[in-house]
Length: 451
Image (cartoon, rainbow, N blue to C red; front, side, top):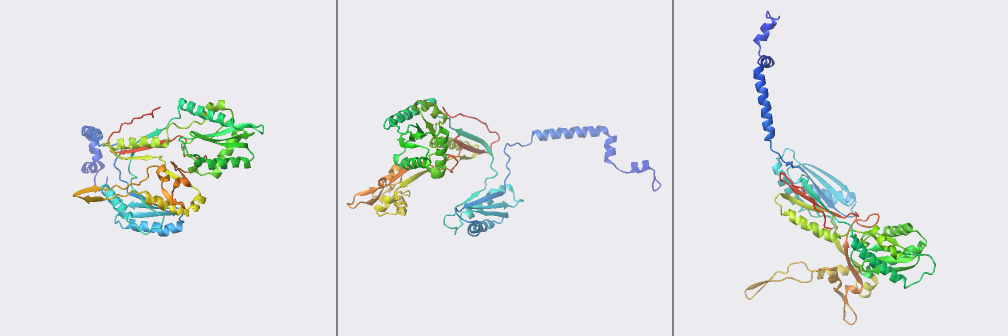
């Protein structure tokens, strides 16, 4: 009791929600059931999406400067990129990393900015970065990446199967016949076991391209005293070195891999070539080649196939972005003789100028004549390595033209990073096609590469 009132009088004079629902249980049950029904209804009618639109308010600008030191990159590249990014008023934070050969600048936008304006602000930053000037020679361009929020809803992996049994049989017969034919031309003098190191090729190559590396390999084996009486074999489908050696097959393959790593570059070997194999008896050619059989389809064929997939997927209304990865860019390599170039009074730097003047890719404009307009299409664009070799670069004393073929050899191939065995980054060649979509549902399908 307090202030002259009993506990019951105090309870009766004050309002208490808990006591009300305890005393009025019918009302409590009705409201509880209503809340549960309301929750179930709201859950079933809640908007659903497989890839919710979550705007990422961050981006990164990457600038490459091969050979640049971190201090120089910070001063000449990173600061200029940061100044351009800072011109946008919605930028909240800028972070940068300057290391050897490249610069990375991170951009964070204002967290309170509406998601609908993120794309507009990032596009504005990209336009500003496109106007960056005064970068050192060899630096740039600035690669602005802003699509961190894209969802890879579908990934297709295209892998090539191994060469079929019929393909191995045909190649084994050609290799066996070539080895037998070559060995008949010379007899063994040292009395050792004769061997042939064979490397399969995806396409025929010019003997001038492979002759010098094979000669270096024979000299390498002689220096190591691993073989003698060696001869170079160059055939349309393979190249190799034949000789006499008492070393085991594993030792010869070890010398081969060591020579490739120490003396040659990754570009000297086409990624479609097969691994080296040692053949003693021509009758064992089939089994030896089957153990190192390469892929059935070349990188160019898989590039064409995935390009068709990419173009097809871009026509799907639900697809917003399609990207390919695992592609090796192709280049044309020029192998030339400095002595022959000097004999014609040319320098190495003159070759690029001559080829650049011949390879015309610009539009020729229009010609107006007799009231009609005619489009001019300049000829001269290179379409194959053979056309490059046909270009005249000098003249003889008698005035006869001299083409590139007189002192150089052209070969096409794919560029890739050097690995332990100087081959492509992966023995299982593949292409990945990533699709970003905004549809509510995506069907997944898998198709095998035709065998």
